[in-house]
Length: 174
Image (cartoon, rainbow, N blue to C red):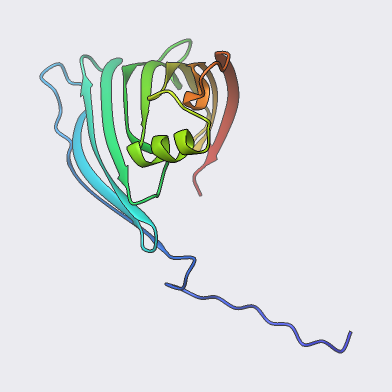
């Protein structure tokens, strides 16, 4: 009581800002499937940046392959690079359902590994795993996507037991 309060919004201060840009090409494949080739980058204006390359190729209208590789620099992430590859199948179980299976690998940044070793906590080069996901359209513009991951050496921690992680993502486009 008696204290004046206000909301302050600051941009480009010590907490930094974030920006992202992507350029891509999205032709149809000879089989009529969708495809995409894109390159992009992002930056935390105070702490680091990253870049990525995406490739999606529709083998048919129902089956597509994907691959992504990215890097992070400047302390923005403890992982120096990551890569994923897999397959998506559309119209699984019903017209609005998609099933995906992928492999992922995240490689620790050399600086992160050095710091952890100095602290007496050596880490493995990275982690890897498999991911199974199903995206279901609930109604136009709304989806639910359960996801299951099996992670080998989670966090790249030596001696860590493999992990199973389950999650659900909801999306609504307004």
